[in-house]
View 1 (cartoon, rainbow, N blue to C red):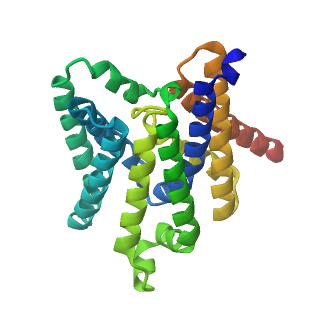
View 2: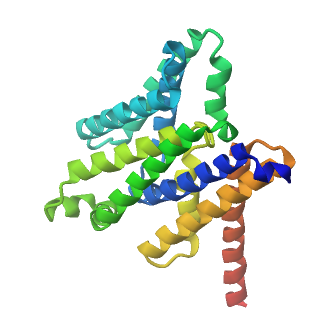
Length: 271
């Protein structure tokens, strides 16, 4: 129980709660626009940036953030080029990110172990600078979503109709993609690049099971996310498990329980 009072664990909880708030707020718009895989894409590109940061001795999380933003611009450019096959943009950028990360791994001189921690998460190593950056990104996401909530809502359900009505679709697409890049780049140290898309999608998938209405879905997505993050970190801290894995497994467990409850509820009504 002493771990609960340690500074590194409290920083982990704070960082997890912050990203648990920001991720599903963006995830709901990505899921509705069928862009769930964009999280994995930007995460792989972020790892390439982290690897380069270690290689040239520059703040790795910062380099990952820069790479993610560049990839976000690349995705939007390719989406316009391949309008009919927009998902190609995600596949192309992901392939490039994996290739670049692999190349930089091969150039590593003793930093590969550090980069690996970003693949699987290393939330216990968050320092004050990391928590500050996560906090800034979370505030940015909250402010943008608050002021552009109506526009994002309309675009998510019918992008063509939103464009006809006069909304700046290209600008809004870029804003969402860049925000996603920011969230992904600061999340990889918390749950790892291989698991980061779970924070964007699974809370939303869970809330869609029962929620009625868009705002209710958003609220329950955040609630499910925060419960999973805190529960996962507490389990990891008390039983010495991998924190990123326990957070994602907590997300999946809540999703499975919700689906089972819905199935049982339906069967009860049919009797």
